[in-house]
Length: 305
Image (cartoon, rainbow, N blue to C red; front, side):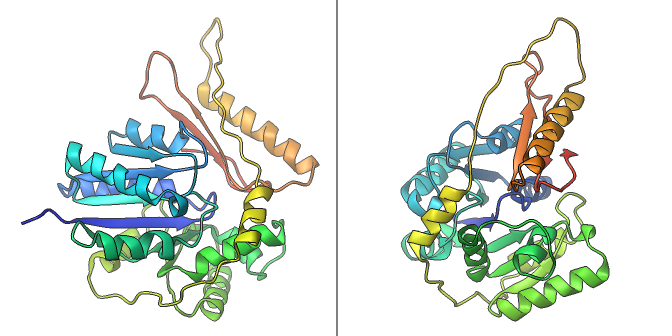
């Protein structure tokens, strides 16, 4: 019998926590004796996420230079490479945080053209709760331009499951307000809550994903690609590798926090909103000893992971 692997795509806007959730799921499946293949995606190459996942020991392929939606053949090739090397039971794929229209350009083609290879699971779109409250108009706060907000809302519109991550950041009232706002606007999607960092709620979501009894969102969003391209253009991207040396030992985590805090202060003074700022520090002599710092909004709290 031909090997048929599960395929799970986890979408969501920049800073929603996709990589953290992928790592958590991959570790759970690995402990269950499953072979896992991970696929990362971004507009550039040499990704922080790829380095992080490979350092964890997971077989990881990277697709750079464009979103899954316009690199479908590369996505299939990446799965084939992982299959040849590791024969995964499960593929976990993380599209670019500004990508949308994934159901039409990835999900459906995989089901129709490669249904003999993959059991495609429901499409999950992850959201940061504070950003979601602001972009859905429930609470005030820093927001993006209308065209960037357009991308954000289109991402949610096509989700089978809208997964509220970092739910521990909200009290009960704010969480209920967010869930109500999502239900009111995106009636075709199931709504669930988790904390990928602590693991709370992840098991329930995974049980639903693998349970075999679920409803898919039949809505097929119509995407205005002119607005989409203008929204992507409004997001400033920087992927950079910087070499740092010093004559004496220094605290790498402290350095990352100093740098990320300085950038945060600079953006705040310019009244610019940060979508996602991620830094890693890789010592030259200890290639698996990573330092990782994240910031997902200008007025957010920088975190080490």
